[in-house]
Image 1 (spheres, rainbow, N blue to C red):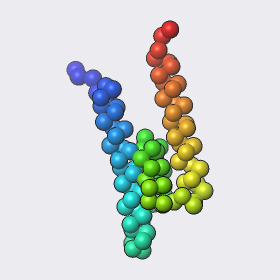
Image 2: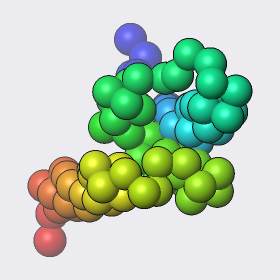
Image 3: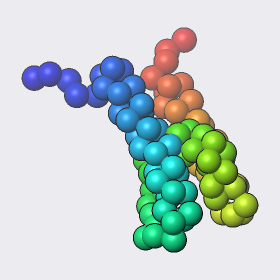
Image 4: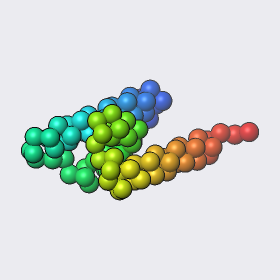
Length: 97
């Protein structure tokens, strides 16, 4: 049976989810300008939590979207820090010295 959780597959996942995070900020900004239906903030945070936090923060500052909202300007960086801590913990747990 072929292993699913390979480094290659994990990297592909993170590239895709970060592109989704980036694009979701672009789409929401465009919709906000037009006064159209918006992407719920909950959805934007879920994308970030699922691994798209880097793309989300790049999108926030590239499009100047949600940067004045405290829960985004603080929340997304906090998610990034927690994800980095989790990755370091998982990597450290798999390394033997």
